[in-house]
Every structure is written in C-alpha cells, then in structure tokens.
Length: 387
Image 1 (cartoon, one colour):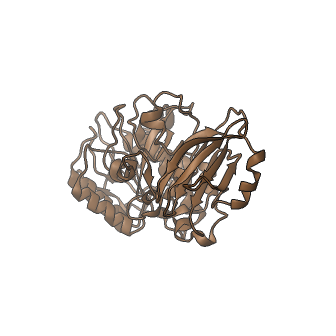
Image 2 (cartoon, rainbow, N blue to C red):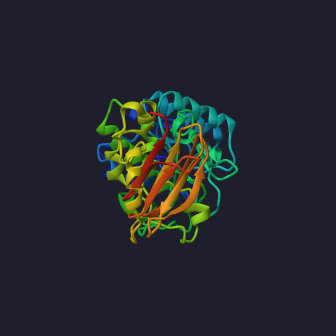
Image 3 (cartoon, one colour):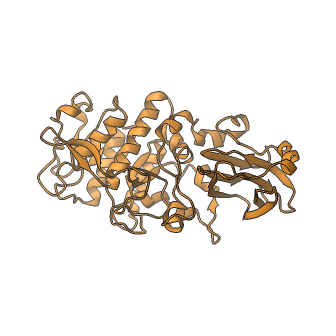
C-alpha cells in the first residue's frame, strides 16, 4: 500500500501488517511509515482498513510516499513502487494521482507488468471528465477508434490492459458519486460514506475514489487467496467483465461516463469467473468460462420464433469481434423483426446496455445470421472468430 503511511499501532490492523523489516518511508527516508498531522492524516490507515475488511487475511505492506498534506514527489512514488516489487507485493494500491502522464512513472509501471503485479489506482475527486495518472495509464481512450469502438487490444494485449485498474466511485445506490472523476474507467466501487479505520483507535466514515480503489485492491487479494499460484495480472479482464451495470442509456452521464464504465464491482461474480487473460490466450479450450462464449450458428434456426420481451432488469452485452470481417448486431423486437443496432469492425469490441429479456442476433456483412444471444441476464460475453 503506497500512501500517506499507516497507524500501525491501530488495534484493527493487528495481525495484518507485513514484517516491519519490509516497511519504508520515502518522505523521511526511514523505516517508520507513520501517519503524520495534516489535512490527509489518516488517509493511508483508512485505505488499509478497507482492504482488510474485504480480504481479512491480507497483509498490508505500508510504504509512505506522501506527507500529511497528501503531497509528495515523483521520485518517492517511483521508489515506493520499486520497493513494493522488491518486497514481493502481490498487489500495489495507488490511492493517489497526478495530472497528465509521466514517462518515468510509466517505465516503473511497465516493470511491474513484467513481474505480473497489478496496480489499482483512483481516478480523482474533482468531479471532472478526466482521469488521474497513473489510473489513465491504460485508459479505454487508448483503444477507441474514430467510431467510438474499442480495439480488441483492450483484453488481448497483456502489455497494457492487465496492469493498472482505474477505479471510480459510486454511492450506495450504484450511482456515480458527485465528486468522482469520470470518463473511460475500468470499474467503479463504493467510495461514498464507507466506514473504516482511522488513527488513534478510531473508526470513521470516508468518501473518495481512494477508498473505492482500496476495495478493489482487497478484491484482488481475495482472488490471490483463492488461487495463490496464479499471477493476479491475469484477473484484470475478468474484474471488468464480471462487474454489474445498473444504468440505461437514458440515465444522466450515460454518454460521458456510464457508456464506458465496465460496471460496479461484484465481488461474488468476480471470484466465480475464470481469469480472462488466461482464457483469451487459450480460448480454443476454454469456451465454458462464462455463458455465451463463442457464437453457435445452430441458434439461427430459432430466429423465426424469437423476440425481445419487456423487462425491468438491465444487462450488458460485450461482443469481441476477433474475425477479419465486420459483423452486424441486431435486436429482435417484440414482433421478432430485426432492428439494426450497430456494425462491429474487424478486430474491435462493442458493448452496450440492454434488458435481461432482449434477444440479440449477430450477422455477417451480408446479413446472414451467425448466432443469437437470448436471456443474457447480468452479462453476455460473446467472441466472434474462426474457432
């Protein structure tokens, strides 16, 4: 945990700390990363408290790179990440951020990628259409073409999309927190009015994307406990795919935020999904990862009898066109007639929000049915390709 330090004498952290010989303070350059007085006092302790609430067996390695006012320099952050890697960290939580991009920090992130260590970063708390660095390191913006479609590299390219998970905040109703920055974000998690630890043996209510990130880091820690031998970078894509969307195109902020958001963290669903990076590298043998993997042409025989039905529950459909040709996506309306929704270019990903009883038909450029998705429930994930 790279932050303002931690109150390691807090009774709530007893038994959850890594050995003291691994601790490091890159503000005072000693081995006591203790919280200090200032506007941000307690920030690191609060982050640590949320991580262990989600993953009670997690060990916290405190690395201090920010002072009591939440300020620090780039060198300290880079040194903090390097130290975490050397000390054997499985996940690196970065509840901090800066504007723009920083080459030296990107090189350190690349080093973490080589070691298979995922990072979780907060997107910022200004309520702006912007994502702080390093949360923006592998932003969806890097994969959008001029039609607003997402390149297949988002899930297939391990060099970027499996390293830094960008986390925004939602409230208890699953709505975007007013303070949360927004834009193409990987996932959202509770970050408004959450209870956690605070120095001097206190428990407090906190709000901020820093705390959303901590909850996601705790979820990664649970996954590590479930499968200790697997590198956690393999879980990044499944974290996005297993998330839950509860909004529709009619909601405020849909075009600027919800449209690009992977969804709200669903810990239970995440822990039940096989790591998708592993899946994509071995998809020929892994069709059973989640429902609707791979199109089944046999379903096209049912087109005449299928139609969408009215429903209240929203769902997400994510289609990865791995083929070399464009494909069309239709929704069968209440009469069973095709309504063209979009055309997915070759090697592109398309996703949308629909309803749980919608019926989606995938066709080639000539309009010939290639497969039909019915009753997708919370999520339908489909791969188009020559398997």
